[in-house]
Image (cartoon, rainbow, N blue to C red; front, side, top):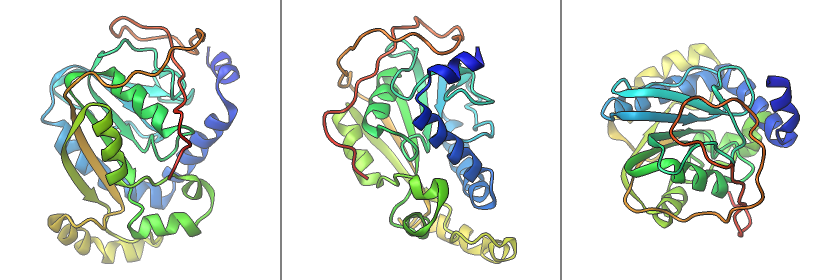
Length: 257
């Protein structure tokens, strides 16, 4: 089934996710994920319900919502992913999830608008969508412009722009948090020296953190993409509510950073 999934997946998208995984497995990526784990853990602890869906390129198991009955990972056909699907073709029914987490999904996406619409559709009214992204107005965002590899390919969409998109999709932004204030220095010695600054700046919650976390609540049924021809599913589905026909609807506007 895995070989078949790889054969059907968009090779450009799969390669982008592979590159992102490699970067997150490195020292800088691990530092970023460690700080995100603290932010996500604090927020997810207050949610409850039947299903949480996580989408993102990271290889590590994501933080779980302990009061949610089922935590599921979906995405590219790579180890650790439970439901294989393309970024704009989630095999979930509309309003299937109580919580959806996009952890760097928009950063490493061929169509951020399309992915966000797909994630928004999966959230039930009153449910929550959590988005983690690289803050372009930070040292990490600056390194993105001068770096190489996966970080160079990251979109680094600003939290204000993502907030505007969420508003159009019928979500109310409840919270915006920042983390990972230490600069992107690979040296463990320097990172240890700057650990105190991480705690101080995190307490201030200034907008200069390397990552942001947006917590949004679905207030109304959002916009729906047009349905195109049926696409065959790439992987075996877990028993989520009412699996639907996959959808792939590109946004009419050009993708922007």
